[in-house]
Amino acid sequence: MATTKSKVSKNTTPKSTATKTTTAAKEKEVVTTEVVEAPAEKKQYKVKKNLDPNMIVTVKNGFQGRLIYKSRRTNERFEWETFGDEQDMDLQELKNARNSSKAFFVNNWFLIDDPEVLEYLGVSQYYKYALNFKSFDDLFEKAPDDIKDTIAHLSAGQKKSVAYRAKELIADGVIDSIKVINALEESLSIELIDREK
Picture (cartoon, rainbow, N blue to C red):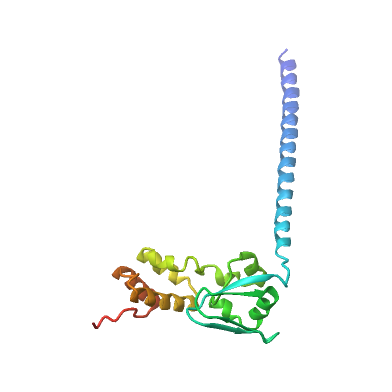
């Protein structure tokens, strides 16, 4: 009888193991199906990046002062009088500007709010830490350590714009915190106020 019991237990064990294997196989199939669906979503996102070269893009002046860009393709002249002024340019013209005058992107003189346009042009890396027009003055309301950290990541062009704007706001009395002024001067390596007075 002991032999029979052991035979029964031997037969029972393989059956329960086979059932577990089948359940595990079904679970693997479900996981595989989910993994296959995820890349399809990414492909659809990439398709959106194929933008129409004739689409119009609003470009803001990221330079504190007059900014002029002359097209080598059409000889058309684009002019922005002050920081934040807007001009409409077609995407193809921006692509040409990237090829012939990359400094407009590297220094963030062209402020473009649409991340898809930046990616299409292949200039996203220059705008990773860039301040946009709306958040530009918000920098001066941050804590001194946050100001230093933000400025450390800015392009040379934006650092000059920050310095120019800071001088304006200090002269107007908008920035009056010595800690903020010291943080700006230290980060920008310039003097913003005359300390000899």
